[in-house]
Amino acid sequence: MSIITVSHLGKDYRQIRRIDGRFGAVRTLFTRQSMTRTAVDDISFSIEPGEAVGYIGPNGAGKSTTIKMLTGILVPTRGAVEVLGVEPHRHRRRNASRIGVVFGQRSQLWWDLPVIESFELHRHVYDIPPERYRAMRDRCTELLGLGDLLQSPVRQLSLGQRMRCELAMALLHQPEILFLDEPTIGLDIEAKDRIRDFLRTVNREQGTTIILTTHDLADIEEICPRIIVINRGGLIYDGAIQSLKAQLGSQRQVTIDFEDDPGPITISQATLLSDQGRRKTFAVERSVESTLAVLSSIASSHPVQDVSFAEPAIEDVIRTLYAGLGKAVPESDELDRWSRGRVVTQ
Amino acid sequence: MVARPGGDAVRPIRTFLAFLGTSFRKNLAYRSEVWLSILFGLLAIVIQAAIWRALLGDGAAEGITVDDMVTYVIITTVISAVSLHRLVSDVDERLRGGDIAVDLVKPMHYPTLQLADQLGRSAFQLAFVVVPMVVIAALTFGIEAPASATAGAAFVASLAIALLVSFTQGLLLALLAFWFLTTFHFIWANGALLTLFGGANLPLWFFPDALETVARLLPYQFVAFVPAAIWLGEIAGSELAWTLALGVMWVAIQGAAGQALWSAAVHRLTVQGG
Ligand SMILES: Nc1ncnc2c1ncn2[C@@H]1O[C@H](COP(=O)(O)OP(=O)(O)O)[C@@H](O)[C@H]1O
Ligand SMILES: [Mg+2]
Image (cartoon, rainbow over all chains, first blue to last red; front, side, top):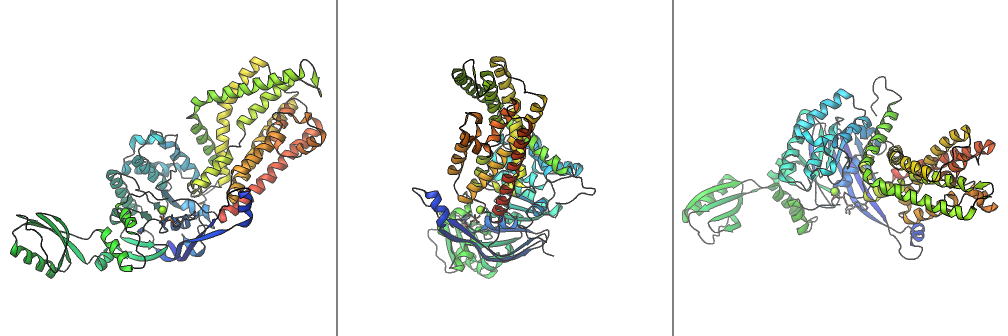
C-alpha cells in the first residue's frame, strides 16, 4: 500500500489583478480580472512507506506548491492526492496530526521563548503521551546535539541551531511522513551535515517516510535513494539516482597530474574540462576501454605523475537531464545558481 | 485526530490553555515596554478627565457627574487595553506573508488557536498594564465602586462579551480583507465606526436620540460603552438583560459569519510564498 498517491495533479494559481487609482479596491472587487498561472501540471507518482524521496527542480518549478497540496494546506485544481488514505485538504487536521512538516524559510518555534516552550506546547497540540514525548525529545536532543539550546530563546539561536530545533519539533509526535521544504537552505556545511545524518537515522530507525525538496543536491545524494525531478510544473524524472547516473552520467572525470606542463593536449576521445597547467581534467567515456585508451595515449607522450577519477556529480547529471530534454532547459544562470544552492526562493 | 483510549473531553480545553499560557509568556518578553502603555493610558485618562471637568464642572448632565465620567473613562481605557482587535493585523500579516502555512499544518482549528493567542496577550495586558494603570488612576482621580453587586457581576459578563465581540469582529475583518485583498480600507472603516459608535469618547447617553438608537443596536458599544455604563449602574434591570442578550447575539452573528468565511477561505486558500 502506498503511503502517498498523486495522480494527474495540477494546480493553477489565480492572481487577481489589482486596479490602482480611485476606488481601486472596490473596482478590483467587482471586476475580478485574473491571470492564471499553472504551477503544477499533470504530475503522478506514488511513494511507499519508509521511502526517502528527493523532490527537486529549479526555482519556481512547483516544489513548494506540491508540498502544500500534500500537507493539505492548498487545494489542488486538478487530479487527486491521497496521503495516508485520505485526501489531505479535505481532512486537513486529521492529516496534520499524522505528518510532520518543516519549512526551511519559516519558523514554527515561538521566537521570544526558550525552545523547550514550543516543544511543550507541541506536546499538547498533538496530544503526545508524556512518556513518549520525553523519549522522543531526548532522542532528538541527543541525535541533533541540542543540549543547552532547548533553554535558549529562539531569537538567540543561529539559523543552523534553529533548524535543528525545528526538525526535532516536527518529529516529536512521531509522524509517519516528514515533509521538508528546503530544510538546509542558507546553512553552513556543518549544520547541513548534522541535519543529513539525522534525517538518515530517522528514516532508518523509525521508518519515517521522508519527502524532501532542496536546492542542494548533496542533500539528495546523502539522504534520498530516489528522486523526482520536476521542471515548470511537470514531472521529468522519477527513479533511482543511481540509474539516472547510469543513464546520463555516461562520462567520468579523469584528472591527471603531469611531471611538467605538457602544454595543450587534444585527444579525440576526451574533452578537456579544466586546465591548470600541470593538472588537467578530462571528461571521458565511462567504459574501461575508452578510459584506458585515453590514459595510455596521453601517458605515451607526456610523463604522468598521478591520475585520479571522479564519478559524475549529481549536479552534472541533472544538468545533462535538462539539456537532454531540450524543451525545458532552465535559464543557464538559474540552473547555475540552483546547483550551487545559494538562492533563497520565495 | 487520533483518539486516545478513554479520550477525555477536557483535552481541547487543556490545549487551549496551554496555548494561552505560551502566548502570555511570549508577551512577557516585552514587559520592559509596558511603561509606555501605562503612561499613554494614564495620559488619555488625564486628558479626558480634564475635558469632562471643564464641561460638567460641579454639576451633572443627564444625571452624570464628573466622578461618574472619570470612572467611565478609566473603564473604557481598560477595555481598549485588553480587547482583541489586534487580531486583524496579526492574521492579515500571516495570511499575506504566508506564515499561515505553519499554523495550518497543525491539527488545530485556526480561529480557536488565534483566540488563545490573543487572550494570552490580553491576560498579559491585564496583569502588567491594566492593574498598575487602574491603581494609579484610582489613587489620583478616585474611582467609583460598581453601582451594585448585580452591576459588578454583570460588568464581568460584559467584559467577556467585549472580548468576544472584538475577537469575532477582528476575525471577520481579517478574513474580509483576505478575500478582498485589501486590509487598509476595512480596518480604517471599522476603526471609524468603533470611534463613533463605541462610545469611548462620548458616551451614548449624550448622543442625539436618533443616533443613540442606532448605536444601541450596533456591536461597537460592547467594546467600550456597555461595560462602563453597566459598572455605573446606568444600564440596569430589564435593560441590562436585554443589552447582554444583544451582546451575546452579536458574538454569535459575527462568530458564525467569521467561521463561514473561514471555511470558505480554507477551501480556496492560496498560501503565499515558499
Ligand atoms: N501564491 C501564489 N500566487 C501566484 N503564483 C504563485 C504563488 N505561489 C507560487 N506561485 C508560482 O507558482 C510557481 C511554482 O512555485 P513554487 O511551488 O513556490 O516553486 P518552487 O518551490 O519549486 O520554487 C512559480 O512560478 C511561482 O511564481
Ligand atoms: Mg519553494
